[in-house]
Image (cartoon, rainbow, N blue to C red):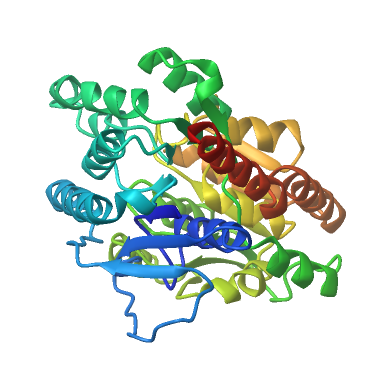
Length: 400
């Protein structure tokens, strides 16, 4: 049996949930698959019914603590609780488990998972979506060195005792190899993917169409979290003072209310907020002339934001306010997909918005088409899912 440990799982409409679902669906064609995950809780504020979906694989909901709100202590407790419940499940079923694939919370959920997998000599394929503890310590400069001192040895031990490691970018891979002293052949890069088909099918039915709204539309679609810095978009758009332009912000998250309050201070600006489900994303993004990707300093340095894939699959130009030496910035610049500018730089963002506002339709179409072509060739589900399946099966085969 292949065990999938996933911190997120459908009906949660987030990328990691869909990754685990796609992996389970692919593996169950030839193997017995069991998925364990917490009760759905993301994004914050979304409600979920109790209807059980009939999957081909077995799905077990763990009664672990969940904390969708962005709060450090709450998230630590959530990770610890998931780790304990995962360990209990494996203690009972370890004789049936041939290999484990895990996309679970850092660091405590990973710690207990690694310990129990090592105890029973079960190969573990660990999917790393972000680098911890650095992601925490960089946000808390005063306590950063203490956090690294306490938690960095834990992460090193987790990665050391994983059979195989998957990261989402080459810069993340290189950083982990150097900082955790990992063997190069132990760690692979697999891009996070979206449901390509819904974007491709929508685009094929709506070829060469830009925004149908009368106003030029800047759009952000994704989680409205502190690390996203969506408040910067609200300020920059309002101060750019572009005639016949609108800003659409679609999604939910802990900073949404804050951004709505800021928008209200610019009473004469057209700023709209929407909730959007996964299946509605292609149609919503089709309304945009340009899609916006703001991130706080340091967030994009070693990661590839999942929303960039969705943006590019919609065939739209992208303005990214992110670390200019990051991998997503390189992708946008090198492939003519839009603009990559310094993060948290309001003046530069205003200038960039003004510049793209003045471009003609053909220029926007060309940038959008280049975005789509890159995503289809490099960020598709078909291409990246097959890589993960191969890694999991290789770990299983080597163990046997």
